[in-house]
Every structure is written in structure tokens, then in C-alpha cells.
Length: 215
Image (cartoon, rainbow, N blue to C red):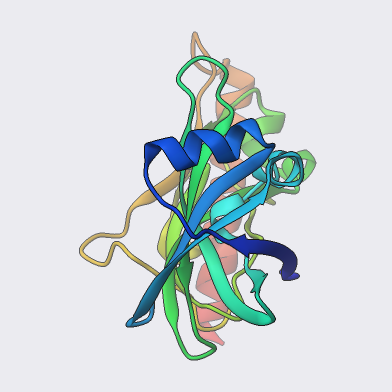
């Protein structure tokens, strides 16, 4: 994932009054914290942040914020929004280092739906988790993880253990092999022909598995 460069100004005043004044001036109050260093109150250009805020995966987006000729390597950690307009009112940025590991939510994409046996038979892809929280190296946070649906049949459950994760990334949930998606039967169930096709496909898959084990 590419790093986004942002310019910011240090804030000399903090508090609700100063924050409101900054917002009236077209600025967005924010703060940089973490890594055992003093917190730095800053302001960003509100219009530029508005464009970034709606970027997919904003909380896993690495940023370099330049403040008074110093650069801070950060991740957005919290965005406070107005309850009605949903405009950003304050942003918290967490400092990270090259050796740091951070927990971030990574989007899940499903590929080869046109090659999925279960979907061809009328099954439905039931997405349990459209995002999975992973522990990732701060300098190599993936934009997404891919789930290959090719050959999967009705009734198949996709667990996190079946998904190839990027190097250095591990699930934050370690006490169970949680479900990411399933191939569910259509409403009303499968017809006789579809059931026969499902059984045949499962038998072929099992035979292939046995052949691999024999070899």
C-alpha cells in the first residue's frame, strides 16, 4: 500500500473553543500520539481530508504527516464525525515505526465467482466477514486479501485457515478457526438434478484428494 503525504500545522491552542475556531477557518483539528513520544496537536486542510476519509481502508492507510519540517509515520486510528452532517470533526493518528506490528481491518475480496460450482448451481455467497482484522507489519499493510471460490460447492464453509495471508500477517483472533464466508443453498433448496451434480462434484473432489494422498 502506498504511503500518503500530508502537510499539517502545529496547534498552539487546544480545547473545544480552539477546535471550533479551526473548523470555521476550514481546518480540521487532529492529534498525533504514540510510540512513547509527546502528543502533537495539529490541524489539517479539511477539504483535503474529506477526500481521503472516504478512501476504502482508510484505517489501514499509512501516512507521512509533515509538521514543522518533521515527518511522522502514522495510521489513522479514530475519526470523530458530526452526528448529522457526518463531516470529520477530529482525527487521531497513531505513530508507527518500521518494525512495528499493528492490528488493522483488511478488506476481503472474492474472486472466480464464475468458476464456483456452488454459485453455478444457484447457491448464494454468504459473506460473514467482509473485513478481517490482522496483525500486520506497519510498513507492509495489504490493501486486501483474496478468497478463491473456484470449485467450491454448495455447503462449503471458508475458514480463515484456508485463506493465504500476506507474509507477516496473522489473524488477531487466535482461539478459533473463524468463518469468513459460506456457499449457502438457494431458498427452496436444490432440485434433484442440482443435487446429483453437487454429489458428483464432491465425489470427484474427494477422488482427487485421495489420489494426491496416495502420491
